[in-house]
Length: 256
Image 1 (cartoon, rainbow, N blue to C red):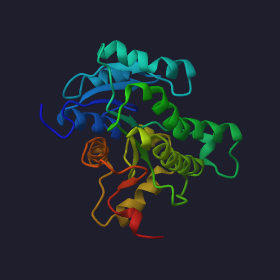
Image 2: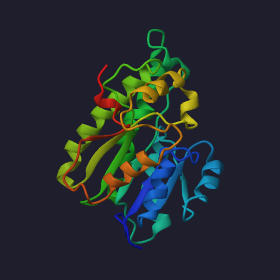
Image 3: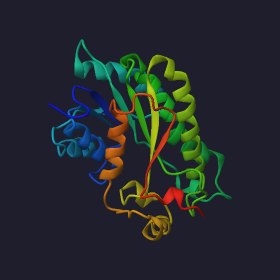
Image 4: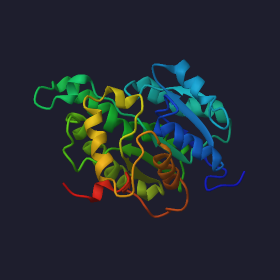
């Protein structure tokens, strides 16, 4: 199959519904020639059903990124699926979670904040390290962020967690660069996904994009962000690492 990911093997986390950026990234990756493996947590049967809606049904591995046993066995599970020539050319990290308490900046407990940071930021490093034995020079790690330069209304400690993710990306790029592995993030605008439903005041966030995106932004269309992920997974950015590529309709450049 031809395409910018022809022959590449990609692992994608965070697919839950067709409205997720992760699903679109997996879909575009397959259309561009990649073999895709998905991971799921909690609602595994739902992820398995959604996986069948891709252009080519994809296998699903159970993964809780806060469970050290899951991480320790992840590479072996990929090997079980791929056989003796097992390898990964790319990882998509689309994992974020904050307890409801994390969306109240002044009242949040450390337990809520710690959970948000562990799941949304530290897991970017722990997932990559768990799969590092399968990666070789030229491989690419791509995560999803939500512009952490801004103190967004209602986003609170999740915004801090995203800032931690963006910093983690730079340090990971520094340490894995000598091995030829690139690490980058896509900063997307808000998408009406299942994850968005757990964010108090999501409509207030979305309203910023309705008024300020110079090239426009469709809250119901995750494909542009998915395409951005696939672009960074490809060989078209061979010396780009530690970067944040904005796929947000241009809102990031509009100032306060």
